[in-house]
View 1 (cartoon, each protein chain N blue to C red):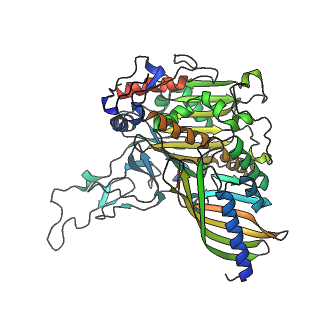
View 2 (cartoon, rainbow over the protein chains, first blue to last red):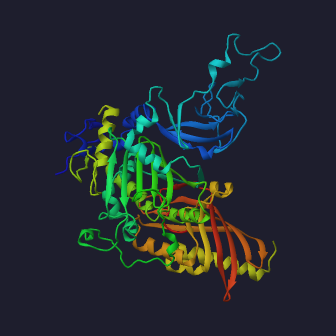
View 3 (spheres, rainbow over the protein chains, first blue to last red):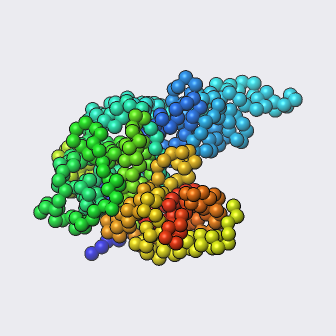
Length: 414
Length: 158
């Protein structure tokens, strides 16, 4: 018997089972979304905004969105990196209109207020009026109308920003385990930018984090990964989290690839699929240790992807409760050989909106939203691997989703 | 540039047949439009214009095209959909011993069974076309798309 209640009658109480349940309203309620924007994205979090290699020179800039707030990432003449709100201090115009580029100064198109690369207001046309008429009041001070500046931190080439003045230092924010895995890819070597992919996925942004914190699905739905032994339930693997539960790493180590009794549940395993052109895969080990895949989810807007030789930042930009944008920035290292760059570009076929693997995810996230949103009174079940929140040395688990929601509830007050 | 009418006719036939095969999701025939050593990519315009090499689909041989087809058929999970290609403003922009360079605008519409038809992807083809055993084949096909934000997923080739 299905009890139907209309969304307006849903009270926002988390189910009594706690972290093993997620209520549907968390994915569809506009008020929950508004609260997420203020408490999570404008709260005490470090949001990913870009790579230093994207803005190598003074005056290079890039538009970014944190939560749903537009900001600008820019490098000044002294080499320092700033993040400003993309909003003129005068009338609120989103003054920066192109995705990326190079400027001497930012000029608002409306009344030509001009800001330098440190965000100081430098020019106000007709400040003292024209022919003794008009002008700003005598006590108007340009110093008081600079661009609002965010906290910025740079870790080995990756730039993060925060709206909060009280956010903890980045290394503490990640915690030792997450920092170790972050530094595994960002080891201080100069990066090489390979390009971007962008997609708009019609689902709640949290479903993307759930997806990457969920190794259970990866070995079932992603037949391509499983077929080529790139990520399989029977491989040695692990799920690690920070102490708060907001960040996590999924780690897979390559093992033998053949059907066993352990893989009989993988319904679609295609052992007869061999590639016409083996160059599509052909990964090489490039990091110390035996992990071949490390997918790191960093609260509140970043997935650091190391899948064989594809390295990418996946940045989440929520667009209302029912949609988000996923912005992929692929990179390698400046000292990569031409052959290594080609491997990265070829393996990128697995990722992105057309990814042989990732397209499965964007497709299923739409289906999730389609099934969740209309049933606001329903709940999802997260009990694979138990009901606890402990680091796990296998991938038949949803533990990192439980951890995520434990922290989510704390921040949101649910 | 001016080319004999018969050549232009042949190019238009090739593109029309190409569109028809993709619209019919006759995917097994798709690699046959290409040479063995072909290069095919679907690349966002922001990468192409800035000289960034990353493509969302990149095939460096007919074999890789075939692998993409097998994956679409047998390994990928996606909702059913219809695609419809409109190809126009076809121009031969260069001719050399390596073949003809042909550019064309394209618009691809997508229809999911439970949604209104939408403009899925708009851009231009930049092709290098060669004669092979009496037929025109793509030696290179670059689908450079303006629609930077892909609506959810791109399953079928453009």
